[in-house]
Amino acid sequence: MKKLIVGNQKSYLKSNEVNDFIAGLRMVKDLSHVLICPSSIYMERYIKHNFITGCQDVSKYPSGADTGELSIEQIKSIGASFSLVGHSEQRSRKNETIEDTNIKIRQLLEEELVPILCVGESKAERDANKTEEVVLNELQGALDDLSTKDVEKIIIAYEPIWSIGTGIIPTNDEIENIISFIREYIEDNYHISGIILYGGSVNPHNIDTLNTIDGVDGYLIGGASSKIDEFIEIINKCTKEE
Ligand code: PGA
Picture 1 (cartoon, protein in one colour):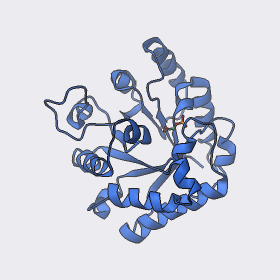
Picture 2 (tube, protein in one colour; picture 1 turned 30 degrees about the vertical axis):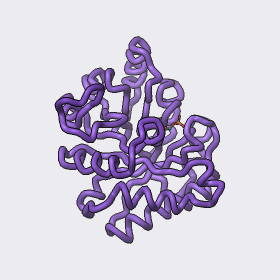
Picture 3 (cartoon, helix red, strand yellow; picture 1 turned 90 degrees about the vertical axis):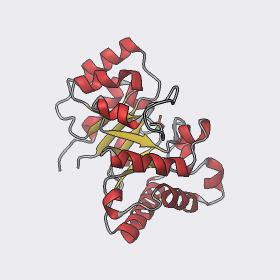
Picture 4 (spheres, protein in one colour; picture 1 turned 90 degrees about the horizontal axis):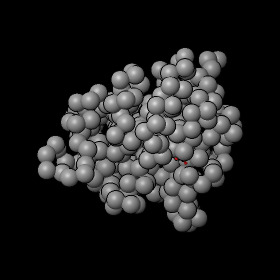
């Protein structure tokens, strides 16, 4: 069992902490399944050390008059290889729509960068038993008009919004069910199996339990991906070959 690990460092780390983090991560033997999305100001530092590095978000506009944004051409030019898209923090705080997410996915694919699409329901939607409906709408919108060739290059992360940063995670059965729901959608519509991650409060204490769930290809990790000891513990627990 080797799981894909994506570390979303959000805006947690300051410059000197990034140095310590990189030094710690360089001690890890096998990083072939570890992807890092640092704050964009630190990306080149990770790239210089050959970490597989990507962005937490990209602009839907091309390079040019787009103050405060990061274009796909720019991130490609420094050697980034992927970007998160549709993260709930972007959707709720920056009003990203599902159409925006679809545009970003298309443009990333055009530049041969890997989109990591985040989907997941809010607490209110979960309480109203709408998890599948919400996830389905998000998948349909984000993948609108994409071909099988496109979709096979996309990684999907199921991230229940109520679990992000709260320390509360769904039960194993809930995660298994929704991941298999997403996989069925991808199989039925694109005839491929897809790479599907779980994200939301993953930490060294729950990773062993999470690793027992069938069908989870890896994890999108926020808070714990900025704490070097925790991150390394998770990586090691997801590296063992059976
Ligand atoms: P968390 O964040 O691990 O801190 O819950 C996950 C994410 O937002 O990607």
